[in-house]
Length: 187
Image (tube, rainbow, N blue to C red):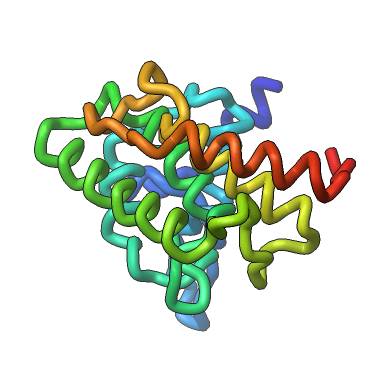
């Protein structure tokens, strides 16, 4: 356990706080690629017990229009799966952020939420199956997980805003009704 922890800490990019692939060029120089997906998994697997979370959040904001795996977007748009990962990182980093960065994070999460509700969530309570979803179950899982993580359904979970989501209960009920109607048993 100690050796693995030491490796993970030495792998962290000291300039950005992120994790990702390292490449060595022909001249022996090391190039460190920041990878939002790997960073999410390291932070998640270590239960948020990592250093430089403020740097990670700031770097993620810089990568907001960069394609996955480095950034938040996939094929030029948001995806619930990646949004959920990013928000989990932002939630973990929140206590370490200054006011300016918190405002930027709030604006980013707001854009993600707007995208989810306008492009992914459907009026019948379903979610569009995207290129990142392998199954209909994935589409529901990531859509609901994202909405839950941002505190859309529960005010006490809204770490990033005081905004009220007056339609949240309607959305919740439509999702629940649609899930029950489909008979989806996917865990």
